Amino acid sequence: MISEIEHREPGSPGPGALHVPDWLTLEQQEWIVGQFHAWASGPVPIRAAKVRGNEMTVRTVCLGWHWQPYRYTREATDVNGARVLPFPNWLVRLGRKALREAGYPESDVAAYTPDTALANFYNDSARMGMHQDKDERSSAPIVSLSIGNTCTFRFGNTKNRNRPYTDLHLRSGDLFVFGGASRLAYHGVTRVHPHTAPGGCGLDTGRINITMRVTGLNSP
Image (cartoon, rainbow, N blue to C red; front, top):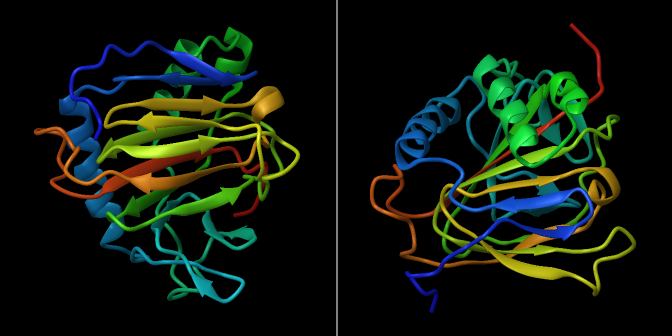
């Protein structure tokens, strides 16, 4: 059981990694959920990607670039061949604000221009195995936003999927940033906690996680 009354402070599970609780207001969360529903309705529908022939329990819709294991394309060639939606400017601004409030130097903040986002939906039984985000050519930080049900997020080391790692709760509205020495840290979601989404966040069930990345790719 997760306590409903808990004072939480920002914390760092690794160099260049920062967890900022309650970063988004409920109003912001609800608005972003509305955007997510619009993204998921096309032109490329939300789908569960297949990794080594196995369908993931998490469903994903992409912006800017379409992620498919283990590469990025402009068109969703593994879904319907349509071009993905462009990366919105408001997400660029939000990503820069996240880096600034995570303590990154202003030069890094000004240079940060994410060009893709993976918007993932977790139902109550969904999980994400330990993995590295290494399909990008850029080593710029990753900005992660959580809305809806709380999850147990496992943030590990850069060498393997084993210990040492830190388990922490990512709740609705939380920000998590990882870059620098932690950019290639293994990480995953071991559990989603049902019935923990706060009223007014825009989700009655499930969890949305949006990760902003810089691909380092160039194409029309």
